[in-house]
Length: 177
Image (cartoon, rainbow, N blue to C red; front, side, top):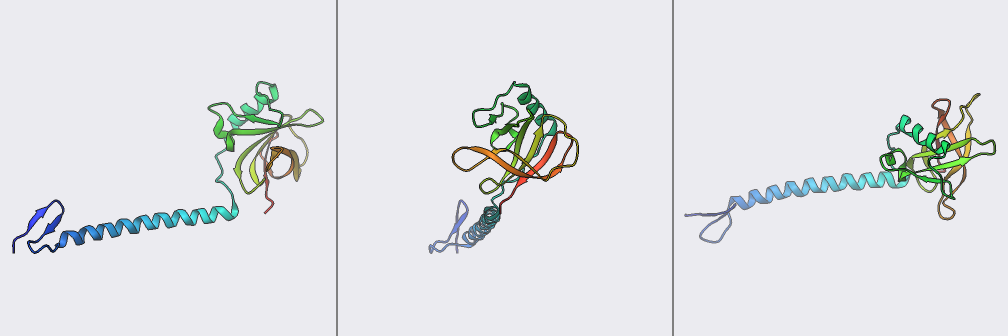
């Protein structure tokens, strides 16, 4: 029996397809299986992140964030009416959504909240800068401006202190879930 080879498929004179079609279907099957595996992994990751609602933490550059906080304390960067400072180009990776939240308390201390991870609603993790070094024990909570849902976009929220990084920095979080 004579066969004629056209591209990848083998055709026989009687019109039946030969082994090459089976080989193509086998490779297509592997491709579909690989694609299905990838989709399953993505769906599982989405299902895992959705109930917790947390975005992955962004790396925190302590030195660069100190520079931004110093610019805010010195007046070079000004917060808007809601206490939000949009970060300048080149420093946007310091805080999730490219913004920080600034509070000036009654004693004149300036607090700057850098959000590194966002959860559902007002849940977040981040770093909080204090313009004057602190002395004494680490507080359990600190009340500063942070993001809210709806209007106004910020309000004072009690954030839990995970630990004090140094005299000016705290790692903080809010988790209502």
